[in-house]
Length: 517
Image 1: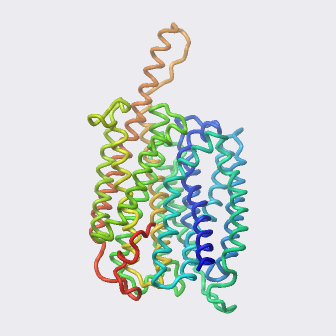
Image 2 (image 1 turned 45 degrees about the horizontal axis):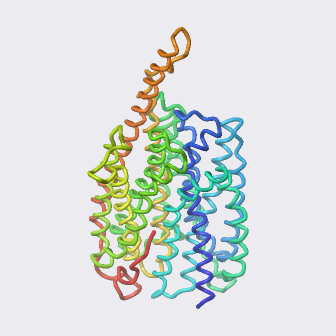
């Protein structure tokens, strides 16, 4: 009993390590951009740094996670830790002398980090399935999922603290000794050998399906990445590449329907409720990533905060997210999953609508004695937090007990896909709008005018840029509010009654009161 708890504790620790790095960039992006010599009005050049990790994470999770069924949990975890450390070293070595080279290095390092980190969650969940029976497994899966969720809340603050104390590169250098220590712990604590203990028990790995999913998502991301957003919302190759991405994703779906070995085996599942729940996870993921990136940008570009100051503003949202995640688990146990899912997405939609209406004098705005910025961020974090536990619990209702690990990982895959596609698409739109709003502005030059006249014109120019930024952020948050409202409607299709098919005879909401994605 003690040995298996230590093993799953080590697995949870490596999941947390990878989850932290999924979010550290959100608070240091402006700092990184400045260090690489990229002007603040050309932030679109840095978006591959964010999307690269997410793309690797989504691609690595279903494909590399299945390798542990074939080769064993311990070697796959150690291989992932080696790759994660290597990707961290590449990221930390990004050179600021030429921004294009620096961004390429950063993106490559983050992609490798994502590939390795994405595999750690399903492997650890599979380890839980090896060590616990059907009755005890859901609670353990919920604990592993909590480590993943903790990363989303702590990661931005963790990154900001290290960057403030040392340098942004320290965030990635420190991963090397952490990964080495984790490898030692895995060697001594995680059981060796294949899950079934037989040398010939080697289930297949859906390499074709994994490659199609990764290629389709990569094409979509490339299709919306526009290095020249002042000309159009999409790049010249955008429509053609997007169409190719949709075609490849359609081929992935067809392959999964016909293939014997699948990334996500839906046999015995209630597909309608399953897809509705995964849709809620996808939309909530898109909203979460937009918040982590754009609230930080608001703080640094409009409110004049540094990295740590922006992280502390974001902390209002993150603390509310964690508290509401616990409350959402209690609500799911008391009322079923549908009620907190619908309520959470609706509250989040209202929160984003409030953020979209933030006034120019935001620091001084208030609701009576309460600062408006704090209230709006807490409302939004509460709404998204309420969704975390019920969305995992609802998915477990739709699958047989033997597929709890795959289903739990699918929730995270859906959410990370939402993050990837959401931040890619909304960033493309936002950068295009900013350049369109500032197209007629010209930076004043201190020639042929008095010092007072130059100061006046410079102040007018800077205020016009801030107005354009404010309009860009408002539109992005309005779109996010609509996405959350769509999630609330979709949540109405989630089934929260009955019993889990083929597994524990208790209702899943009772069996897994604190399961989290």
